[in-house]
Structures are given as C-alpha cells and as structure tokens.
Length: 165
Image: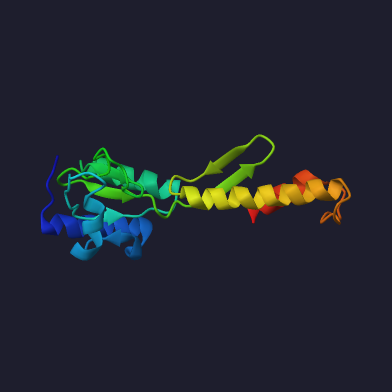
C-alpha cells in the first residue's frame, strides 16, 4: 500500500473533486480526523475523505483508486466495534453519508429498498408514516372515519404515493 506524499494528496483531491465536486472531498485535519476511528481504540487519520452521492460516483472513485493503487476504506457512521471503518495507513475513506435515500417501501411485501447511508431511525419514521396511513384506511374501510381516497385505484396506490413522499 502506498503512503501518500502531500503533493500526491493534492493531485488525488483534484481528481476526486472532478468526480464528486470540491465540497465532497475533505482534506483539512479538522474534517478528516473524525473519519479515523470508530467505537474501538484503533485510530488512523486518513489523508482525505471522499463523499460520493451516487453509485456512478462510487464506480469512478474505485476506478481511480485502482489505477493509482490506493486502498479505499468504506465507512458508514463509524459506530462499529470491530475497527472495520478505521482506514489503513495511506488509504482514503469512502464515506456513504450522502447515499441516504429511501428508494422504495413496499407495505404489502414488507420490503424496503434503501441506499447504504440511510439511518435506521429515518427508515423507521418512513415506515411508521405508512403504518399510520394504513391504519387510517382500515378505519375508513370499516366506516369509522371518512376515507382519504377519492380515486378508483384504491388503498395500494395511496400507500405507495405516501411511501414515495
């Protein structure tokens, strides 16, 4: 593995910024220090952190790192207790915090499709929103309240629209 010299860090920063934008490549000590440890006693501050916003950006980052023979350390929230998110010397951190979209929630099959950076509490809130809507529909179907539905497609469409909101 290569330990990066300061001029190499700057060249890598510029190349990564061309992929994800300047704001999503961190190099200052105050920015990168938090990405150098997790819930263990292990620590190693990375030379830079890149925060992609799409799978296309992740693929481009991987290609660049592979071409330059630089290791990547993937990182979510850094709350692990195994040292897995602590970067190796000279590796760059690939943070997934921007990959935080809920792509779909299927209340019928009880399946959610999310990006890797979705926080559990955010997903839970979205599911609770759908659960509350389903309870409203159930009460309406039993005549205990007025139905929020006006169209012919019924409850599933309403739930799916709510899930997309």
